[in-house]
Length: 194
Image (cartoon, rainbow, N blue to C red; front, side):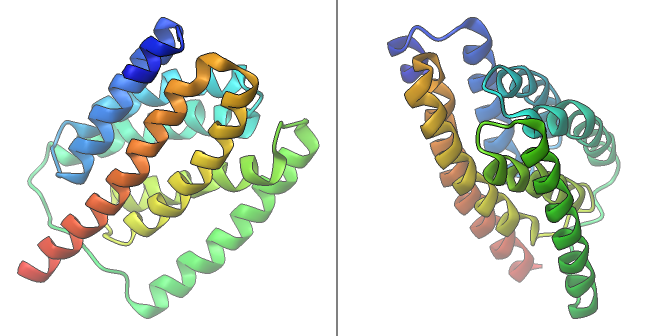
């Protein structure tokens, strides 16, 4: 919010920052309405990503993050089935599928004229993988979020150097990265206690 004020960011950046912070902090604490904020955040981030020429990111947010966030919100309103851990065969399957999806996403970003095609391609697919894992309440999702948020931090730092109004998005990504660590610790501790 401070970065939003200091950089005279647009109201959309302000709304995106607030809903994004509410989303990630409530998700890490397993708040059942977190994913509703995630859907709102995804819509605003899709618009901001498009404006920053992160086309893969924009498409991922609007076509995938919004529906999956709404599904996860619906699923979280039902009795909680708990948290799950991947078995080794499941982890291998997720890993193989992830590599294939990442390569396809990078190819798309390279051929779409993205500002940072390799980063955009990877950061387009990582949240898709993490969101599906989130919908199935897999605690390994936090490792994907951690990697994704670190990558996004680099992308938005570079974009902020070009468009000053995007510093608020960069500041939000710093918070997201810290929150990924908090979510990872919280979910793993919860799993050990159950």
